[in-house]
Length: 495
Image 1 (cartoon, helix red, strand yellow):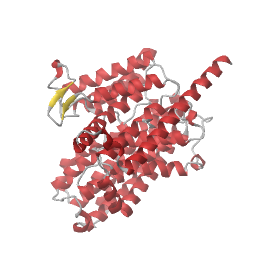
Image 2 (cartoon, one colour):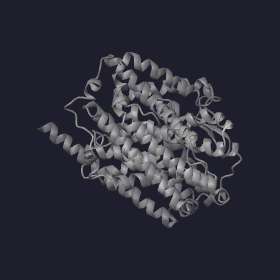
Image 3 (tube, one colour):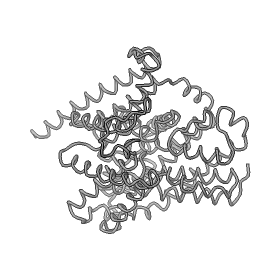
Image 4 (cartoon, helix red, strand yellow):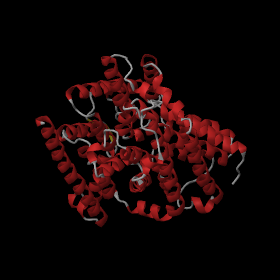
């Protein structure tokens, strides 16, 4: 493995640019890697890996900045970060929330790296054993987070979630190449359905900006309170009771990364759901609880190492970013698969070292100057939001290399988010349903095709029965928590 000042500089450059891409809503780690991929022709494979993995780690980590400070997730995997990070920022703990997120990100990244190094062969074998049945049930398990996050308004939350699934089914059905549920006016544009990035930034960016515009562009008070003396400061004591949460969330993130196609969004949602299920005070999650922020950030950074397991051992990308990395490997003449590590031990060692280095650089770049990063929200909204809209439009337009329909979709879902806020429907369940709906359908159809149309196939595998038990437990707890929330609300009204 060749390593020197130049390789270190490339890793630092990758992390820095990745953080910027992740921190700007509409720009993602995938986009960062794709933009810089042509530049790697000038470098050898080892140097290329330092740059691309830096972009990957920085892009995933940078998404926490806007999620915490302005409640707009910079990346799909940071959706849950804003649930508790933004309330903390509103009460003057923005710097504390950012530092908790950065430390959790470092732990998740290092944990997944250890898994990648020590357990790649057995975990790859486990992933091979996952049939479409287990993959369907894992997605169904992830869907139970909708009920968990809809305490007090479960009916609206479930409706919004299944509406998201319905929207996700728009497009071309891969099994027979026939269009379904597509208006004639948009038949060509919606052949591949709505894209995740325009939907995400529309729901959380435009919807938020429309609400802010309605209230007026006055300061929300967050900017003045971020560095307030009365604000609670960051301390390692914040992690005093979070060890189990860190391990569980990082493990879930790594596991979700290993399962090809599940992605960081599902990882973060599942980790957050389980944290709420196991919490001694689940009612505090969503109001600025440290454990919710820890769960989201340790799980989405746990994805970085986990997603490389199927890529390097099976040749299957774990998420969209590793799909771009697969293209980078191919451009440099590397063939990933079962024999990759045996045939390329030097490249394997370079990957491990580059991931370790990039996670450390990410921590240094984000943790120590975080007070300066937090000043992002001191920019007047009348100047910041037009820039955000411009970057979101660019991000939506480049999703499919210049399809104007994605820009219109971006605005359409922004209006939907604004309407949802007016009628009391939660946006997050809709997004969860949209993210998971396509895979839910795919694995359901694959299971039916493989079993001759028998629904009993979903109950025949031992591992599937274990997941069914987890689903039942999660739904049962959600129902209990919903009833408890309604009782507390009634008692509060009477008081």
